[in-house]
Amino acid sequence: MDKTIRVVVEGIEKEYADNVTFEMIANEYQTEYQDLITSVMVNGKIRELIKAPFEGCDIKFITRKDSIGHKTYTRTAVFLMVKAIYDVVGGENLEKIKVEYALSDGLYCSGKGNFEINEELVQNVTKRMSTLVEQKTPITKSAYTLDEAIALFKKYNMKDKEKLFRYRRSSYVNMYCIDGFYDYFYGHMLPNAGYVTQFKLELYHGGLLLLLPNMNEPQILAEFEPREKLFAALKSSNEWGIRLGIDTVGDLNNQICRGGMNEIVLVQEALQERRIGEIAKEIVSRGGVKFVMIAGPSSSGKTTFSHRLSIQLRTLGMVPHPIAIDDYFVDREKTPRDEDGNYNFECLGAIDVEQFNADMCALLEGKEVELPSFNFKSGRREYHGKFRKMGPEDILVIEGIHGLNEKMSYSLPGESKYKIYISALTTLNVDEHNRISTTDGRMIRRMVRDARTRGITAKTTINMWSSVRRGEEANIFPFQEKVDATFNSALIYELAVLKQYAEPLLFGIEKGESEYYEARRLLKLLEYFLGVSSESIPNNSICREFIGNSCFNV
Image (cartoon, rainbow, N blue to C red; front, side, top):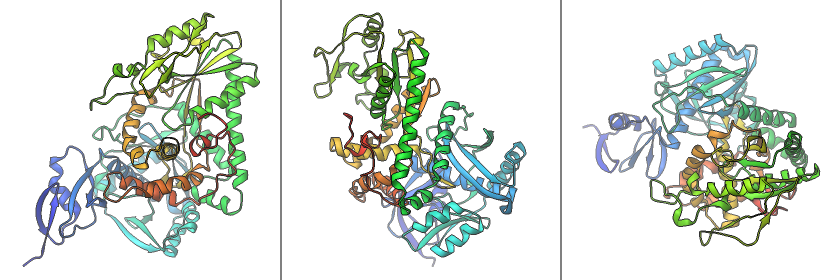
């Protein structure tokens, strides 16, 4: 008699032959799910579909509409693309293929070697990827010793991974293989290429753009929407990193080991200060600008940036005054609610737009205006004699989530406004094929600041992050191209500094809690970095907004 095991699938006990895999079980249930099943949660732990269940295990499915599932699909698509490029170009002609950064629903990739990125290459790589998909080419996973893994990296000319794994503490490395091609990825994979049914390759600014479905609409492969200003900011920051000699985490670790951290900090801070100065000069040179509107996603360093921009404006003869859009919140009971019945503080309806425009127009006309302050404890707007009247050199520096939305400042003349989008646009990669998500960098920043200033746990920060992201998607990102300037607040060294603050917070999340997997994922990311002291960080640095001891009131 064949041996069997009993497992619990989505709350129902089932019996299977003992040679069953999670993929076989997922295939049985796939018709019940609109979205592709990409992995499973087993007793609170994420498992790949290639793995096998065990007696009594509790199985829950993860689909492409989940953050974990979306990352798994994306990672597998990148693996197929890298494999296809190696096959088309030839390993001997390829120096590097690098996944640079995310743009809209795509990943921008660059290449070096004895080949040209052109339309013919796009067609040939697409054809090769499609063949792998049609053949459902298996993807396997095996553990190799550190020396064996480094030998494979050398074979495929993956120099960034060689540098990264010099600092690897574990003696073994999990490597993925498809059709005889090996690579290392930070995270799980799908069982075979046949799962990657939706993708598209396009030429973009001398590189390749790998387009994939959005997590919120995984059934649709949308047309690419160019992000020229965002791309320019990312490219500029990437060039800064190259000039510093730091393109990946391995490069950063090398510099830390050589005692070069102080110089890295000073140069990076100087580069940011120069950019802030350039923005200030452009504001003044335009003439007639009275309102500097600043917006960006959570933990972008907007407050520190506003202070530093104000200082630069002062050096040019202007008299800046900060205004927070949050001070124009409607009283708490008038705040709209979301679909779950909770107050939606991030929608435009949570702001008294009419009063804001009335006050700003009065200031523009030279009238004296009493500006409000919002009491977050009482949920009321209050007035405490904060009067303002604008002279010829006065300029208002306005910061808030809706600063870039024309509906927020509809009554102000266009020539009186200068709009700035700020975000921590991480361009440092783990290695050539594993990028660091801008979102991850911001979440770690916020986690550290929340714990320091508000006593909020990492568990709470992670739990609320999806809601924060929804607010950004609706209220900030649609306006990021309609700006006068983009500022990248990411610091190439910051995760090496934040590591010492974030790790104890993340380790505080217990196994079995719903945020545990995300905490482990972030801990694994931080594990790649050598930690460094924060002593050399200047007190006006954006990093200080999160770790403390800033010279500004942040």
